[in-house]
Length: 271
Image 1: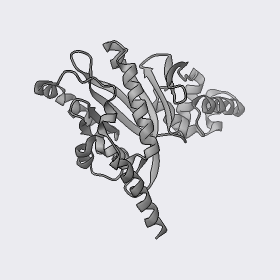
Image 2 (image 1 turned 135 degrees about the horizontal axis):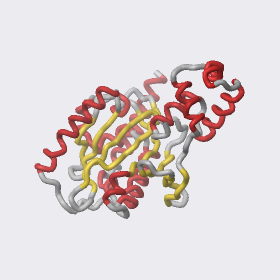
Image 3 (image 1 turned 30 degrees about the vertical axis):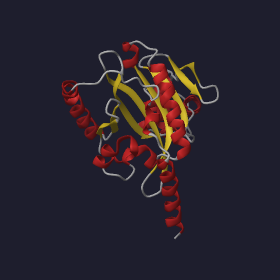
Image 4 (image 1 turned 45 degrees about the vertical axis):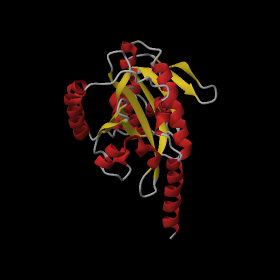
């Protein structure tokens, strides 16, 4: 009975948010000045089919946002993002899916990040736009009432001829962070990233997290299941040295254990 009440309250809270949800909020300050032709859509279809194959092989949770039609062009079958819904259900709902599964407090945060991300986007040249991605964490609520934190990465997938946003590719993974937010923009291959402050409403450049060669080596061996003593023997160092490097890794990545470090560093292009 208690479980049923919790599920009901969770659904009621999301429903209340849905009643006040305005889909136009997701498109500020997106310009959308020039429509995309049917032939343009036909030209990207082979890439969508490739994404579908990749998602199945690697079991990735991917989806493609179509800003021109205000819908999802593609949604993978991975259950993480679906939150208990069917693949085609989510694709059909499009932007109306978010208020079904995102708590109100995180929905407000998503709208803010979305708007600030587009403001940054329109200040860049086309090459910079294509090479950038934005990352942030937020809470999702499964149909069964369970809440979980996900990391959401978004990168431009296709632009219009005049450099406007058309399609974006989104990757959803489990988050290693306890709190929502943690928004940043990074250029692929750049030593710096732009972190967003919800207090100052500004992006601030900071050095991206990097690991030394030894730290990367220890992290890879940990991912393979080696114990600290095994790693020490393999690298011809003391066990205390391995512990020292592991502690540095956890501090740099701001995670709680080495398996979180493996997951985080892999998802964030660190190793």
